[in-house]
Image (cartoon, rainbow, N blue to C red):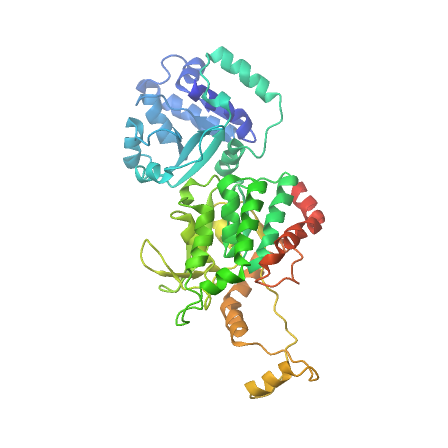
Length: 464
């Protein structure tokens, strides 16, 4: 049955020595009375030996609250609560006791989905009824996981499965990497239209066979990472990203959204619609891949990491460039949220803190010019205007107010970026996109193929 199928999966999802323990095989190994209280010391000692010998010991509880089930809960470092994603999120009898027991053990919700079934939905209902769960994962499962077979037939089927090499991109492999502390995170930075290159980078990673267990980003990186986390399809991601880029390149729609510039040049309505049309009412909890985005909370003067809630709203908040878009009011607490790039434009450190062993960080931020004109102790705007309008005058490089504001905003990110680039856990990649501007969305196709120039880095990543 289902439990049996998942049990035999342990042979391919856990790297290194692994052992599955059930009440039946405990009795086979130690005798029919092994679980009786009189043999408590012997059983405890034997289980300790197995945990020393094996890298992973998987305890499979009984379907009811038996002494073995209680033993599994006491022994566990991490408790997996497995459910069928298309069923009602009812809390079972065994789950009710978890809130007050095994307080030291981490508890994760694992939802199984049929390969021909609907996309994940209503995950928040599962989590709201299980406050003791610290994280959740969605697993896209082959049909065999849901098939009902006798134990001999089940063993025979999985012996055939084991003859094939394991799929590192499968959700079961991702579960194994997460549980063993080997998760790979992809972090996408902010940089406006230069972020279109991140679509091509994802294609390069797929072609190199590099799996993604966690994804997130800032500003345009928040948008692109959400596209991939939603469907895990490069083709669908590219179609939607290009569709959105063409909307951003529409002068007509841009003009219509102009407003009296007290807070910002644009009302944000058109920008909101462009993102909402892509993500609809999708919740972050319903994404296939664990996802996060970064915003700058100007109410509390702090960085915010969003791992739940309305997807389009927090993506929009992370892309709210000061002066152009008004801050987004967080529906949870009313705080004003701005572009995440003001505080952390390449949040590899956030992914690391969330459990990633390796972080692949894609930097598409602007590179500031340093050969600026030395104009002395004062500056006349009229002189600067003459220099720029007169075709015969010598050209000068002087920052305008928007450029000065942008540089000031990203000052705090410079030191953090250097720390990321020099860290031992981070693989830093910068596509060759320096010649493109922040608003060059009309050059989507051209920018997207820039990743083809990353062949050497792709080979290096694949080997590591």
